Image (cartoon, rainbow, N blue to C red; front, top):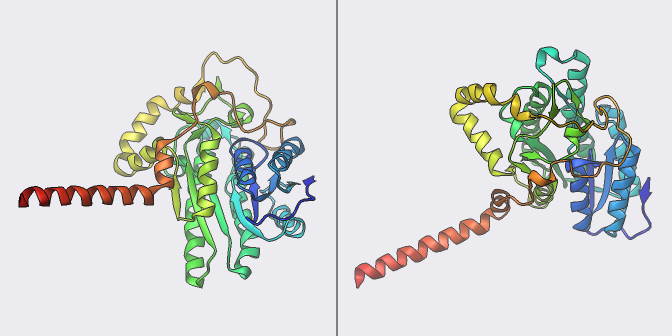
Amino acid sequence: MSALGREPSRRGVAVVTGGSAGLGRAVVREFAAAGYDVAVLARGEDGLAGAVADVAAAGRRGLGLVTDVADHQQVETAADAVEAELGPITVWVNNAMATVFAEFTRTAPEDFERATAVTYGGFVNGTRAALRYMQPRDRGVVVQVGSALAHRGIPLQAAYCGAKHAIVGFTESVVTELLHQGSSVRVCTVHMPALNTPQFTWVKNDLPAHPQPVAPIYQPEVGARAVLFAAEHPRRRMWVGVSTAATIWGNRVAAPLLDRYLARTGYDGQQSPGDERPQVGDNLHGPVPGDHGAHGRFDARSHRRSPQAWLSRHRDLVAAAALGAATAATGLAVRGRSG
């Protein structure tokens, strides 16, 4: 499925895995609005069609490719199709994920393996496909969508936390190899907070109540803006949301205390008691029909902006302002003493 017929974008071509819903859908819209042509890789045809329509509505060329990112050959084939139909890949965003909410010992081995194959293996496959084209051209950016849970595991999400931790180690290895080669290709990681996405409506769930994100919750557009910024201003890593920064720093300085805190609060905090609304299905082993968009069911509790994320995107401006203020204060102090 495609929305072609326009002139190729001068900004380039962005590929977004898991771009049919949730954060990925918001990322697709963000890149299209910024003038990129966008290829969307996902399993569900309904969501792909919706995402391509979003790209077309922004006046850009879109291409939807039914792809299971856990299958490396499907990802390679998709990359070939993007290059053939849209042109050279400028940015590749690895975002696709799947998981199960359950205690580790209650998680079926096949479910754990599937979640790992998508959430970790999908990033490996996507990075390989992107580098196959980017390295010979010596340009391009790969953006890995990470999480605060890549640095701090929590109960009931062992599969997801393990995969996100693995992505960090994998990405560090790739970065060092690119540096060794003197490559201009950049690989960045953007670590996300809890986001209001359909994930909690279709995740495979073994909990007594409906799963929910741990507050504070942000709208997916907050994360999407950070992904676009990382693609256009590559840096090794970005943190989105004060909760992400607090989680990462807290785990560095007080991991045992966090173990005990999460043991007490992590179960109830990830469940929505009294929520009788049915889930739309289970997308772990196959797509859920329908176009589910970017937002989940927590709009009323979600923040549309993150001051921390704004500061992260404008850290050079903030540093310059701080330096200017310090210089002015020093000048005033000197004049005061000389007077």
